Image (cartoon, rainbow, N blue to C red; front, side, top):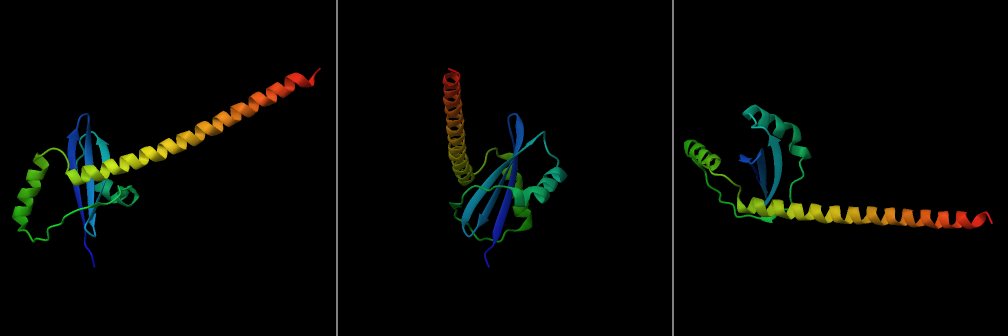
Length: 138
């Protein structure tokens, strides 16, 4: 049975507070970015994760190297504090989010192109209809 590791990092990205949720499953990392707005309290972050975790759209997976070590709880707490003091997100997470952004961009382009073509076709048919109406009365 494989393990799934999740890590949530909340940091300030001017002008909003942002949370990055990283999920490592089968040695593959995927991430999602959530914007909180004002500085969230701990209970607000917990409530957000509880309500929205299964509705979040994670990025495509990226290969990740995972170290299997057992840490002393106090050491883990100190390391977590060091992580919160540093700003920014891991490079693998950035890659995963960038990949997701590119996919969304491509989907948006395709959808807008189809809408534009449908609108152009509608306008063309309307012009043709008006042209026929002009010649009917004579």
